Amino acid sequence: MKAKTQFVCQQCGVAYAKWVGQCANCKAWNSLVEQVVEPELGKKAAIEKAKTSGRKLDFVKMSTVVPSDAKARLSTEFRDLDTVLGGGILLGSVTLLAGQPGIGKSTLLMQICARIAKKRDVLYISGEESAGQVKLRAVRLGADSEKLSFAASTSANDIAKTIETGEFDLVIVDSIQTLAMDEISSAPGTVSQVTNSGNLIIRAAKKTDTAVVIVGHVTKEGTLAGPKVLEHLVDVVLNFEGDRYGGFKTVRAVKNRFGSTNEVAIFEMLGSGLKEVQNPSAALLAERTNTDGSIILATLNGNRPILVEIQALATKTNFGYPKRTASGFDLNRLNLLIAVLERRTKLKLSDKDIFVNVVGGMKLADSAADLAVCMAIASAVAGRKLSEDYVVFGEVGLGGEIRSAFRADQRIAEAKKLGFKHAIGPATIHDKFVVPVKDLRETLIKYVK
Ligand code: TYD
Ligand code: MG
Image (cartoon, helix red, strand yellow):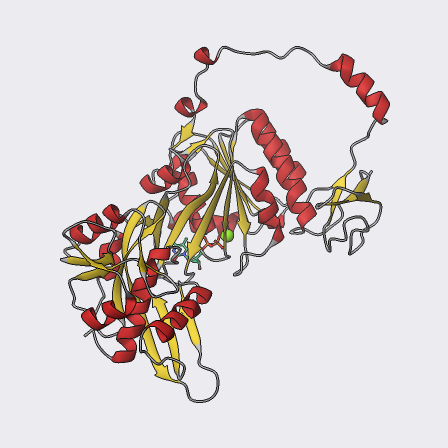
């Protein structure tokens, strides 16, 4: 028999018997999600029952509690990934690994499975691929442990039941979008299936102290509702980002109940799977040719200082509206910086198409990238270069002023390590290595030549 379901508005909580496009109560659109109805008592009866059904909690002295951390972390044997996780995957935790299709989620998880299955019982559940297909990948990655099992399933009920047996220390569910719960009629991948299946699996994991990693696909815009809803339910959310084709890929925790969210692990996809990149700056700068439009930025990726090359190209606009394209950098920010350049320096950019690229597939989320982007554009437009021994960092304000950057010491240390002689940076930093600059126009006149 099908369980009774109702449609609950996720904004205001009002329930409906049928799906409607707009909630009549709070007027939100598309906010209804199908949920299983739990049999309910009347309000009065419920309160009466609660009065008598409660019992005294079993409490423990905090001094006698063993931190769950100490006993139950599974190491992925990827040094940086373990750090991102806060020391490995915690038993009983549920982790969501989110990323675009094709980025390497299944590959990474199969590698982790192989490593953990050396000592522990691991189950890989796929709703996307057959045993034969997964085996192909496993062979390629050298995963051949006796303790690694596989199941193909798209039933959230069956998966939860399997986790509840407690036979496995780690269970991978690839992917949440393929799962469906029997009691709910909507298609796999819809918000209600994702939320309810997720809930079922999380409950099973907590019950038996099983570590679970759930894969979630996100679209290019990161818009798919499913994993977003799921983010609130799980303990750890890892984002797998980067270029699908070549380049570096980063795994970062956007939520972590058991660790910091500032760490990143940087990977490279090889023929034999993913490999951690230990010295990304050196790898990123290896192919550099010092042309105009190229500036080295000392940036931070999470907690890690990294040197990346920013490239800009300017060409004459052939007709109409000038085009601006950014890869690895926020387009709105680029437009803003172009406006600042036009207004605060004498550069004429309104008749030029401008392209900015962050080399190596890195995605920058660092306000101190501004100065490097501005200098790259100026360098490209003027056809002049910055001397090879400089790195650059600093935020650019709307008045064309150079503003301070956080963690300057780490940026400087990384630049020194890679053999640079100077940094062009905000005047607030007092370090012999840094050539202090205050104003964008002066900086361009003085250093881009
Ligand atoms: P995959 O892990 O299947 O991506 P996802 O699960 O995120 O959708 O694999 C991504 C790509 O990686 C795929 O196009 C093939 C490639 N790949 C390698 O380059 N080397 C390898 O060793 C493996 C297993 C895959
Ligand atoms: Mg996959």
